[in-house]
Structures are given as structure tokens and as C-alpha cells.
Length: 253
Image (tube, rainbow, N blue to C red; front, side):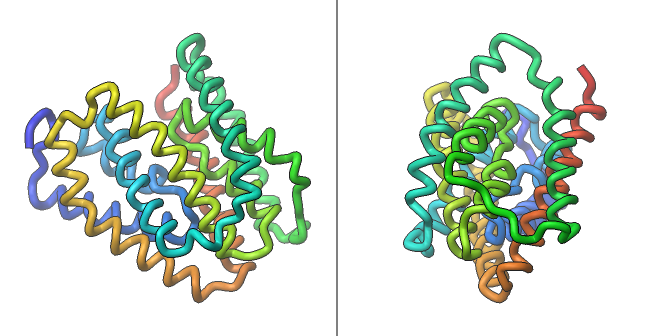
């Protein structure tokens, strides 16, 4: 491969295994790919290529899940969340162009970590949100998706407090991520990012790992109770929060 994407057999095997694990988590939770994959990918692939790579693969993974289980998605929640997600993405883009958004990372990380710890503690297991909560959660998720390519855990917090079944939570979350990544893929395509054939070949070579991962993740989800599923979601949210804090202090402004 060219343009900085020449990868040997050993590194490729590691990347393939990492993507497989990442998409097992995606298959279970409907988000979290970047959390697992980005640190390993950054060792072998230019950082500028990672976001478009994962955006394209996340889009295909979401399409696979929606094609299998789209009937379980809660479209009333999607109708509330998607417009706010779009609005938030526009706000996030404006912030990205006018300020230094990295300063928002520790505050968001602390909030997300605290919320996940609170949820995992079992202190208030029966939490719920009013439908109006879609407006702040949808917009904040859109903002952080635009700023950092990572807003899935915000939607997960909202959906876990709204939907009664794990199937509805997982596929509604996946549909949201699919719509979010579609926006990024279109923007990358218009910018000519996908004219780099080496990037497209890498997506093709890694696609079997993605397909295996989402299939395994889906099957794991089918064996879980709602309580077990929520615990997995909260663990992923917790790790996301810790990763945000670590990212800020590892790469200070």
C-alpha cells in the first residue's frame, strides 16, 4: 500500500484482531469502535486516516445490523434524536473552527465517568428520562461526534433510560451511529479522502473482521438479560469517560 499505509503481515494481523474485538463491542453495544481500535491503529496508520477509515467501517457495520434487526428500532426516539444530532453536529463544527475544543474533554470525561460509576453502583437501578431529554442528549451527542468523532456513549445514556428492551436499545443506537457516520463519510468523500485507494483496500481487507465481530456481538447480546446488557453498556461508557480524560492529559494543548 502507498501513502503511509504500507503494513506488514504481523502488524496487519494485530490490526485485524483489534478491529474484530472492536466490532464485537459494536455488535453488542452499537458504539465503541474508536475506543478500542484507535490506540492500536495510531501505531501503524497516520492519524488523519483513522477517522475516515473507522467512519466507513462503522457505516457498513451499522448497515449490517440494521438490515438484520432494523424492525426493532424505536423510530419515535430516532425522530426526536436525529434532528438534534444534526443541529449538534453543526454547532460542533462551528466550535471546531472557532475555538480549542480539547478543553472540553476533561469536563465531559468526568461527567461520563461519574454517571457510569453511579449506574454501575446499583444505587438507582430504575432510572428513566422524559422524552424531552432527547433534546439535550441529541444535541450534545452531535456536538461531540463532530468535535471528536465520539458521541455514541451520550446517546447510550439517554436510550438506556428510555427503552425497555435491549434489542430496541442496541439497534436504535446502531441506527443513530449509522446516520452520524454517513454524514462524516459523505464529507470525507466530497473532500476526496476516499480517492486514496490504499485506504479503500485496507477497508476491504479488514471487512471480514468487522463482519465476524458484529455477528459475534449480536449473538452475545441475544444471550444477555436486559440487566446484563445495561451493565455492559455502562462499562463501555465508563471506559469512554476515562479515555477522554486520559486523551486530554496525554496530549495537552
